[in-house]
Amino acid sequence: MSRVRARERRRARAGFTIVEVLVALAVVAASLGAIGTVAASSARASRSLDQRVSLVQTARAVEAGIPPRAQLAPGRTEGEIAGHRWRMDVRPLPVEGIPVGSPWVARDVVIRVRAPSGATLELETVRLVRREPE
Image (cartoon, rainbow, N blue to C red; front, top):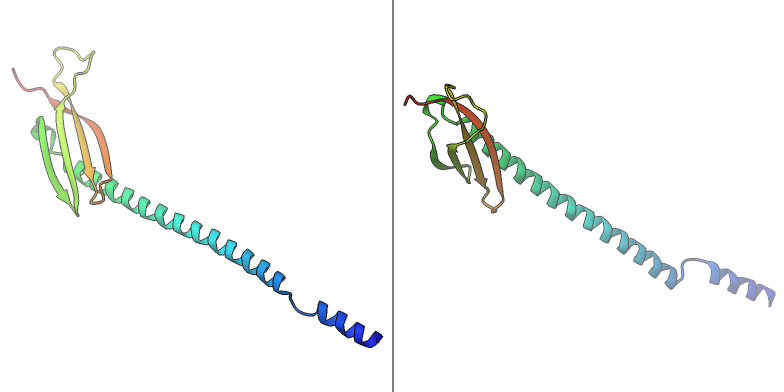
């Protein structure tokens, strides 16, 4: 009888029990879920970064096309580059402390870019232009 009991004890210890298998599957499922969440978050961040870079590139292209000082007049210009709508507003910028006889006047240039997805970027700069003769 001791042989039979020893054999039964070995069988009871041999291999995995169904509970151990279920626990292992639960651990694997939780790990895969966490990995999936991280991968999805990373993909969203990558798309957002790509969109931001595209907006900045478009804004810089518009900025590079700002007319020379002699032609920079107040007003609005609009256009589209690679599906991105842009608008450039040029307006006088009142600045205190400029001498009355100064040959220069400041212009505020605001560039707004809208991506096809609706995301927007605004870039503001100041340009100095020669004062128009009075």
